[in-house]
Image 1 (cartoon, rainbow, N blue to C red):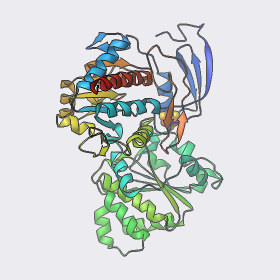
Image 2: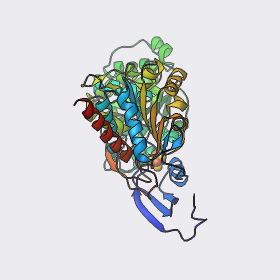
Image 3: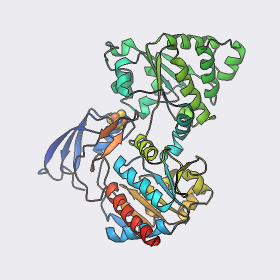
Image 4: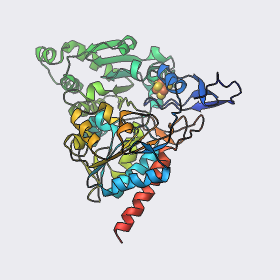
Length: 444
Ligand code: SF4
């Protein structure tokens, strides 16, 4: 790669209000200084965002490989379409690091081939996706939290490390219309099983027993309704005295606008979707006293977009089967780690995700044994083992499109410079066209 230091004559440009897609905060106020094909400054970005922009390199080498050998774009599309169209039970997975326009094409492909469409939500906030279907969601934008929120709670979430600008841009520090003094007008509470870095930012830290989130949330639900509770039992079950929960509930009821942000510390521990349901139900209960909302703190840059796109197209956010011509939702049955782990899927399309690096062993072994297609800006264990692999441009840095912030607000991308590799939209668009032609010919 040629750097600005190597090439002092590189064109310099400033991209204002670029969007960082490293985490679900999707900060859209980043000013980039671009010298040729290198980003040399990323103003306003946090430490993770700076690393995302400043370490960005376009990987060299061919854009398309078939069985590890360089291939033309057309041949790669043809082979990928043949694999998917010949499969009996194909799986489409990933999506959370692609723009919505590409995600939409992936859903269309899954529909044409009668496969399963699933996103990385199934291994992070999938339990919350199930809980939203069951309980509903009292919600708002992060802008409302910044302007109104005076009681900010985090449950099983550590934004100081995972979403570094969450506190400063949205939830704790901003001076808003109804919180003119910013941090001074807010109470911050952190509930977790261990004292994370975020605890330093909180006024109150409540350390609950591991795997007891459900019991703790139902204690609060009971207090919200003024139901009598047994002191000894509450402390035994939650690890926290009843008086602490009571004090918290009084503060929650006294707030003008409360927000609970929850993370995988809640959704991926014992209870899973029951925990998310309990938190969403508590939020609903609190609205008999004051205004309260709940939001999951989402990790990947466009995982919220993936939920939205799959939901607009199928009615469900992830783990959807399209083999009968209509959508069926069943996490555990149609989710990727499960169809691979049970040895059911016979082909796969993996988009911007690396299951061969992070899935359970049985799923990894099965994926390695079936033909699959992978799209990623980087070489990964998954792209290296793929029958067809496409090296694609990085969304947000090299390509435009739309992403959804964690509060479901769509944000446009402002790319810094072009990549020699195709966008994932281009690959999926061409693949969908080819799949459609093959399927149309099958019907004639
Ligand atoms: S908080 Fe997230 S989106 Fe914002 S700059 Fe940091 S990594 Fe990027």
